[in-house]
Length: 188
Image 1 (cartoon, rainbow, N blue to C red):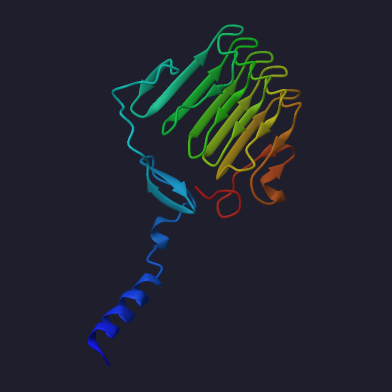
Image 2 (cartoon, one colour; image 1 turned 180 degrees about the horizontal axis):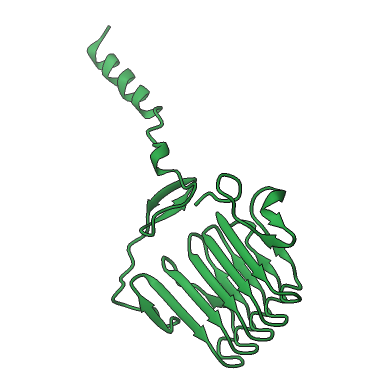
């Protein structure tokens, strides 16, 4: 056989090998320096920890801390900056009335503590999302983390009037709360 044809055949065969390792699977989760993409932990995009985005109240490393303490202080939807891990606290009544949104691959911890604090609801995309709604009607627009790789919610009585949309199979929704379970409701 022609040596050039053998080389081409070997090169084509090498392209069909799936070199992904189960060692980097997202379940049960990824280290803090990685994010889950297509079921694998990959290195997070570089974030300049020295430059805190303007929408953050403060930053620690690559965590953007957003604090909304008074009525309407963060009225428009609060959006986590791309590539950052966000820690959002809406403590004032109606403080994040436009809701809170975490875009693809952003990891968010959200606390809606005041009355109608996050009335516009919480929307989480593919990243990990933890939402606590403790004020009356604090998450009246509901919590949508159906696309999230892992979501845990804690809604006080009457706080999540719009309901919760959980990722994964039915057992991820337990009594109206999203509960992440390793191997079932958790892929990051």
